[in-house]
Length: 464
Image 1 (spheres, rainbow, N blue to C red):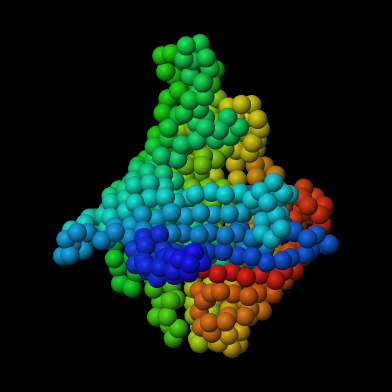
Image 2 (tube, rainbow, N blue to C red):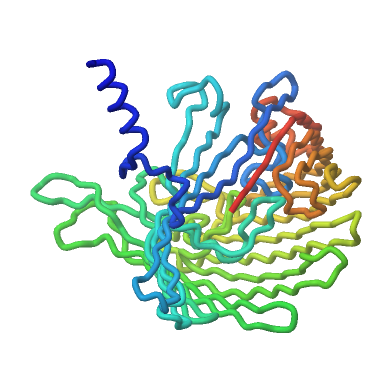
């Protein structure tokens, strides 16, 4: 009898619905997306070969050698009580996992060689078209940026990604971002001071505020985007603070314009764009393959203890031309010149007395072409030239060629079609200065060489 009662109880628990048993798949107010890449590679008997690109240029020059990376984005969607209300409300989060050294998937843990780095680059709430109006608002941390040149992973014009809030009406938006940090090892303008409270040194925070105004003007088959930024760094000279690490307030500004035109071709999606951006003072950032203006470049003027004389100019150009149903060309050009606040043409000390370069010129051109041999089989082939001149040194230069036979299982003739399964081979040739000075993550790993090689089998996916 006892066994029969147990069986009946189990059956009832299985059949009767409970709140805890509702499957997640029935929740219509939840969505999920992902971007990632994974694979295996070897080069010169090295299991985890590094990028062939030049130092300080990130993925500029080609990104086929990028290491494993995983993003998972989730969003909660809320429906207003009033059925006639068209407000679109979402709360979005994004998790990212990567490493700068070695393997992050498989039989590894966070304590293994090349341990996993986890971050939460997005967590924000947004309400769009409030009560059917053209007004929208958001607050939190987000990837706050526009277009990128995907083949070099370069968000080239308006990458403000950090924490803040924004308000938008039609094609005009105003935002305030707070990219604060407590980092006594940074060569950037000090984000800290030693706040003496009750005789105890406490690491305090100097807040940088970034005020951004952006406006897009529709033009035939495209748009023109105008952008302005004002950066303010709080002073560290509080009345109760007595330390040599206090610096006066500082500021900077950015102005820029971008033009994008959609091109009419047999395969849709072709475009051309051109952007020009000038940053001054503490807003002259943009290095390491990125373009964020709040990452100030160069050294300060130690006499005035500010960055008033610093500036940078960034010009980018890119095109996606779907020539016909069998071939596409995706090409880019980048020029960046950056100058720190010091008078030095070469290296200069930062606020902590450490030497860093005070001038640089980056130049790169390249293209990834796609031959649609079959709907499901594409041949990717890349060629690129990159040059970086730090200070008064000779420029370090690299020419790189890559080829990647690619399986495209969804059978779509489109450069954006994913997932990809690629066999990758890249070969780079360095000039003598780059080779002698190990001006590449690859050269730093293998030693001085004029040629670099990379073999890999890779996959890349995204779903949004």
